[in-house]
Image 1: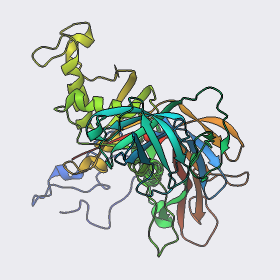
Image 2: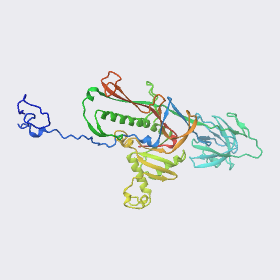
Image 3: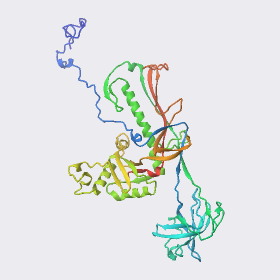
Image 4: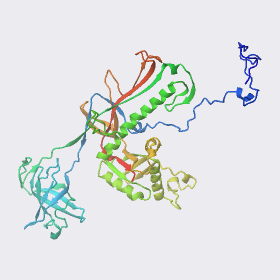
Length: 486
């Protein structure tokens, strides 16, 4: 490359114009052709090759956020209203026509006999399909309680006597459906643990189950030194939080904030109670952990199993709270399985294509993405859950026993608020965050350092800090269903 004129004689121009004494000449060959004088064509706009990368939004659809002031949130849930026992033991009948039923043969903590004499019960034996109705002759209350019963057909319950109930089976269930007294019999209250009785009744005290959760502290930080802040490089962006325009070094700060906001939701979904003895971290119970501990888990739901498997889920919901409206948040494969299942049973099904839900229009049948349906007495609203599809989260673990979807009951539940001292209605899922009149820790952000407007320390950098303290309350988890892979 040669300079024209020679080095030392370049004279800058006061205006942007090409003169003989102010430009470099690329005309001497050896790769220095004239085209090298041009700068590369640079696109200012950032290419959004992954679309909207944020994953949050699930809890905003199904829950709410409320402040709390303590290290723990406690709530109470109702127990069942009627008296029933599973896994009771029926002894073979003796010389008469009565049988003795042990209410708690396994000695399970918290199980106590509260069945009174003259109560009438139904005895069910799933092993044989047999059932019998009987009158309680006498009762021993308490944890080691037993009842002596006589079937209304005056036959022993055990199989050899004709009622078909298997003696000492671990699957027998009984429940109370009423009582039967003769004329003029006095009824006296029976104290718990007070031996056999032939008259009177046992007072059933209402019980509730108490649950608790603890908030976790989430933190993140973005740091840029003062020197880099002085090197300006603009990029045109359209961010996931709805803003657009030109960003300088705060481009990375914006993404740090978006990532932290996703962590706020992801931690509420994935958190577990900590069993690490070396760290004073109690952990927190997230949505998946709560359902696996107190809810229902469906393993390996596929379109091949179809309606029969889904109906089994509905039958199980019937035994729980039977919430009429429910939402299905699914990954791609499970959502397609539901579409295939619904398409195969809708009216006008022919050749693998369903027209019935589309006014029998073949043109409309191309849209087979069912967003809502009703089965039995339940309404379901189906949507994709991006968190289960994204390759950077659970979407990258196909083929293992991973989470494939969740059924969440819609609506609200009535709970007793320990702080307010009253019954209030809240969504089944809601987030509690730490807050007081002086400090709101729902989502805090602040600047430290000595650059970018901060003047809090001698650090030659700007630090953007993020903090939140929160936990998820999953009420009535027995109404939730977690779909898992095989």
